[in-house]
Structure formats: structure tokens, C-alpha cells
Image 1 (cartoon, rainbow, N blue to C red):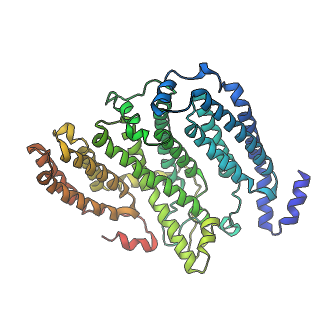
Image 2: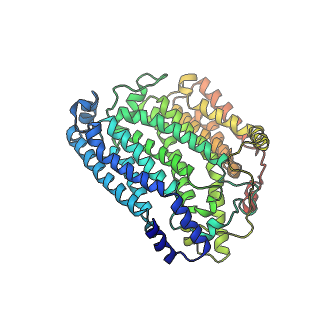
Image 3: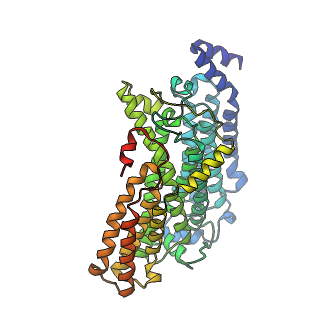
Length: 479
């Protein structure tokens, strides 16, 4: 330890860098934890019985034949060698990260953890033990490499400044009240998707569906699912887990201290939400049935969107303002920075006070009723096959429009995204026309689509309450 301190003194000049170095010393335990995780991985194949044929579930042969995969024994060997290599890398990167000058090794630990999340999918791990072991160790490796310790490469000026409210804003879009709902929804979706992935990979013999019988099994073993080289439910589970981890990273200043993380967070939430809705759309159209857990996870993904948009807007505004001040956009995007006019919220980040409770009550009262009703209309449209006897192209149209109406209505719950409600005008107009131009309509569906179309057009007019200010973005919220 004394040698590490002497080495640091040669390369740490100013007081702030010395403070960073002391922070590094206080968090050495995380790197020892990473070394322990590596040792655990080295012992896992022998302890968890990766190569024990008795450990393979009864459904492994079904998956092997259906996917034309290599034998379970060969895939288990691939998992064994992957874990042994990853264990050695974690020990190496964890040891290097103990030294101040080798902080880059934290990224090696992070990427090794990401590999562990994907390895069971790539090798189609034939047993649940190796899969869950890699998921757990991978998540912990990411946590101990970049969530807990000080981020390597971050701008010292960005970390030293306390401002956490963007210029012209009335709150911090990176506050825990904005991020914790996303983390909770992501973890909830992870557990549901992990159950679906367990069936796809042959770790369990049956999959649960309380409403549609064998609908879930048919969907996750359909040709659409088989078009993916890996278990698509497993890919979703890994994405949800990464969302939860990225949502926990950073503090209330991360819109300016870690713009790259906010951007990655937005990429995980917004496009993945679009993919989830796409799969919900094609289920009854292409496969002819529904999947309860898929519907629930898609709804959870859509509910994440309103909590994501404001942080993305703040991050883009920060980059634009930094460029106007003559700073390098590339540099501030990757290392963070500061801008003039930012404010500071002095309240404790997670302390629940009377003020916080009042704020939560105001949020509930400010729920845009028109958009909530529009989302309900969207849900109803998705099931006109069952409620109104819709058939053919009209039934497919109702399902498609309903899913999109639900998505755009919920997304527009975010005050910064209120202009998105204008899209419901188009959907409402189409519903007025659809029964007359598409096959499969009857009297009930014609009346139902007409009423739904009129409601969507009328409900798109009220903007709903806007309680906060968003600097230059306010001009887009006038309508």
C-alpha cells in the first residue's frame, strides 16, 4: 500500500487529484471483490457440475433438436472454458485496478462482465446453474468495476462542480425519483424474461401463461423466434438487466458528468421499447395467439419511456450549450463537463420528507387524463378480435393501431414529450376510414372503430398540465 501511495504522489499534482486518489484507496475493496469473483468462476465448473449429464434438464434434447444445436456436452464444455477464461481475466483486471495508474483495467472488468451476460446465450448453455451463475457474476463484475468505484477518465472539473439542475430547468432530470421507477420496472421485466428464456433454452419443461394456454410456448418456439441465432427472450433479459444497472450508475449530475451513459441508457430504453412493441404487434398477426408475459414486459418497457425522455433532452441541451461556449462536444460527451447557469438542489437525494410526499401527490394529480384515456382506448383496440369479432385485415389494423396508440400515449406522459400526442390525430383519422377500406369489418367493428377514432382525435387536443420549465424546450410545449 505504501508503494502505491508513493507512485501516486509522483503523478497526482493538484489537491483535487489527491482527493480522487484517496477515494481510490477507500474503494480498493471493490477490486478485491472482483478478484474473488474471478476465483469463484474458476471453481464453478467443478462445483456446479457443468459437465455432469445428470445436470441437464429433460427439455434440453427438445431444444437441441429444434434449433439444430451441437450436443449438450459440447456446449457445456464451451461454457466451462468461457468461465475459466473469464475468471482469469477478472483476477488480472481486478489486481491491476488496485494501482492508481492502471485505472483503465476497470473497463476490462466491465467488458468481461458483459461477456458473462451474453455467454450463456451464445453457447446455448444446457443447464440453468451455469446460466444463472454467469448472469450473477457478470452483473456483480459490472457493479464493482464502474458503478461503485470512481469512474476512470471522468473530468475533474465535472466531478468537482455540484450543479445538478440544468440551466433553465426547475429540477434535476437525473434525480433518483426519475431513475428508480425505471430500475424497478427493468428488474421486474428481467425476471419475467428470464423465465421465458429458461423455457427457450431447455432449462424448464413448461412455461406459465394464465390466460392464453399454450400461446406463450407457441410464440417463443415459433419460426419468428427461431430466426434469432440466440434465445430472443434471453437477449431481452440481458437488455433489461443492463438497463437496471445503467439506471443505478451516477448521481443527480450525470446529465452533464456522464452524457455517454445517459445516451446509452436512452438507447437501451427507447429502441428496446420499440422492439418490444413490434413483437407484441406481430404476435396475433403472424403467429395467431398472444403471450401474457410478453404483453406485461412490453407494457413495463413502455412505462419506462416517460421517465427517460427528460434526461435525454437535458443531455442534448448540455452538449449544445457546451458547444456554444466553445467546448469540445466529443470531450464533454465522454468525460463530462460544466456549463454556465446550472443550479444546485441541496436536498438529500434519497431522504423521504414531507416535501417529497407533496411532490408525489402533485405528480399523481398532474396525470394527463386525456392521454390516460387514449392509452385505454389503445388497449381496447388490441383485443377487438375477442370483443367485437373483428377479422382479417381490419383485426390486424386494430391491433397495430392499438399498440401504437398505447405506446405514444404513455410516452407523452412525460412533459417534454407532450407533442407526441399529435400522432393520435393520425391514428384516429385512420380508424374512421379503416372499416370502409379493409376486409373483415362488421357492424360492431365499424361502430367501435368510429367511436375510438373520434375519441382519439378529441383526447389529443388537451395538452395536460406542464408544471416545470425546460429552458429552450419550453417553446415546443406551447401547443
